Image 1 (cartoon, rainbow, N blue to C red):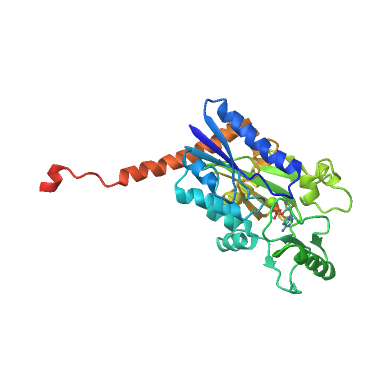
Image 2: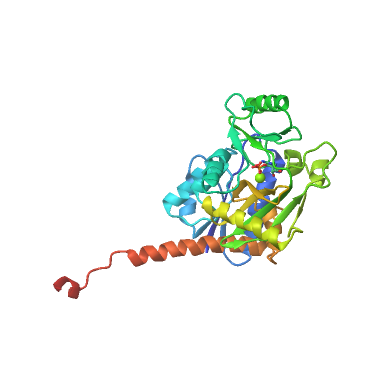
Length: 339
Ligand SMILES: Nc1ncnc2c1ncn2[C@@H]1O[C@H](COP(=O)(O)OP(=O)(O)O)[C@@H](O)[C@H]1O
Ligand SMILES: [Mg+2]
């Protein structure tokens, strides 16, 4: 098989660490397929679209792009170009990517499908006084905990006003959402497999910090917030609660037409009710990330996870190819012509 690993080579403002973490996943995945005798090409995406030619010659594109030159929304266009060219690729399609990145769009779709979404609004001027507190203020079209710190959760109107003002200076679109106190869980998906529920255990968060996944907790390795947010998989919860969380997460993933691999983030309130925070198509696929941990909980090592994601994509593409061939017009036979 000819495999292209497609990735974003980054932007001028990327640090050496940012670039290294992308290349680490690219190299690890390349090694896994090369060791099995496949031909692997590592192809960076650029605005000139030359990469599309390289992809056309591949049997499968392993799509690791999270943007083009660091611009996140171009991620959708990469997937859309591959779709339009009929090239099989791993992970989710362009519609799901675009819809999930705009949190307000995803929330509206999920809520309309009957899923439990904490009350939210996109800030347009003043937040109405009846909006429930505490509330969390987050960028409406970012991911990876961008813009989240210990001041993100507001307990009174004054704090909320100040935080909203500060965030709207920094981000184009800002979302205010009812804060759900309670434990946080993630559910991962690979193809039609739902992986065991994982918990983000915040019991060790430093004094004065809210139990949320802040930017520091996610990215500043060794910081008090990082050490205070510990992933546990499988989560130490009753089967009943695990089933309840899983059902909601599966419905959210289906509603957003998730494909390939993904992760749904949820919180469970004090009454034991799950709430969906977010649907993440194509989550981080590095060996140390959440999805890899969830895979290990069902006995998959990293290479097994990586291979399964390719298999899911190829199987679907083969199905489409087979269907096309079956439906293609057949050359008419002499008998049918005279009939
Ligand atoms: N409504 C909410 N209630 C409680 N915590 C929240 C809420 N929304 C977000 N958080 C916290 O902020 C973190 C990041 O928010 P999320 O919506 O998942 O955005 P991101 O795309 O940055 O991961 C979550 O993991 C959670 O800890
Ligand atoms: Mg999240």
